[in-house]
Image (cartoon, rainbow over the protein chains, first blue to last red):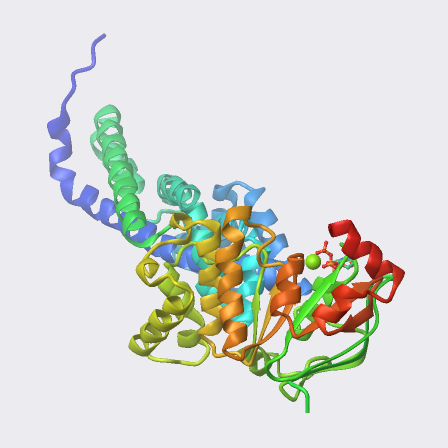
Length: 220
Length: 242
Ligand SMILES: Nc1ncnc2c1ncn2[C@@H]1O[C@H](COP(=O)(O)OP(=O)(O)OP(=O)(O)O)[C@@H](O)[C@H]1O
Ligand SMILES: [Mg+2]
């Protein structure tokens, strides 16, 4: 038995693919920006906050890092309505992504903060800077320079992992693929093309992150 | 009133008392050299003066501001009390000029252009006009330490605390840093320096303080004290150094 490749069977669905791609891109960009913001706050609180806050952040990080993403997603989308919090697929997808990257980036950024010599903090404080100013102008700048490669990898992982949101019918690229192959029964072609799109997306994302790094992140 | 007044300060780490009632008056223009064995509490004393460490009893007043206590205005205090460290502690992501400009722009809200002018001025003072745009990693240890001094000077401190600022340097780089400090002393800067450079303490210092077991064990005019140490501990310390 031979299978005849028929890529043209995808053509009628190019708009579905395009919308799915768009959703995945927006989801990735938004959750990257928001997730890193959460991670920056989390890492700062973990390193410099009062014990109760630092403890709280630690629980959050451990909870997220030790459970599967898909379970987190299901919990937010299917579980929270039991508490009266009903979210759309799209909102749930965004929240799950931000919460997930927030935890991982908290841990990554914290490692960067730990690597900043204590003497630099004392030098900043001795120059009459407040702890917050020291954090902003001295500690985080150095921390980000140190962990930028690790953070970049995590962002790519999160982008690829975002395919999971199709499981709650958030209309991303994978969701589009599932939809198309359920219509034209061309599973090989559809997933082959979608895999290629993810591949190109990864390469572009890594390239973009490298550009941003070269431009803004100075190791000194 | 003295610029820095230290009165019977006691400080413990846990059960270990490292400052056992230290008193010291520093007047404007004084150059106080603190010497003593490792572990005698020199760094701890210096760090108490700008509030990097807290103390349990006694009082420190710097430029009229009480250092200890819950509500000490440490930010105001530190605008007038500079500190230079053994390990330079330059910010590696900033150039020499940016290192110097950071505190004036962030703390004093000095406009960038003006801050840059200040940086040019203080870096010229430490002999590093051509290195304004160099990163710390591109500078020698002696140059880095001079940038660190310039960084403190940019805040126009009334007193500068120096904790063994030449101890991390290769011997051939020590003098370029000491010359800068000597120049500051000549210009009337009030200095409190912990040092192992005995000749420098004798020639440049106006006061010598020998610390021993968390106390000021002996003090006085450097030349007199070095010529005729009164206590056996200082005699031993001075001869041990040779
Ligand atoms: N953070 C700390 N926790 C506990 N003990 C400390 C701490 N810092 C310093 N000490 C102790 O306090 C004592 C005084 O230390 P300090 O650093 O002031 O000595 P020092 O005179 O500066 O010595 P050195 O010449 O080696 O720099 C030492 O016994 C040291 O072990
Ligand atoms: Mg010391």
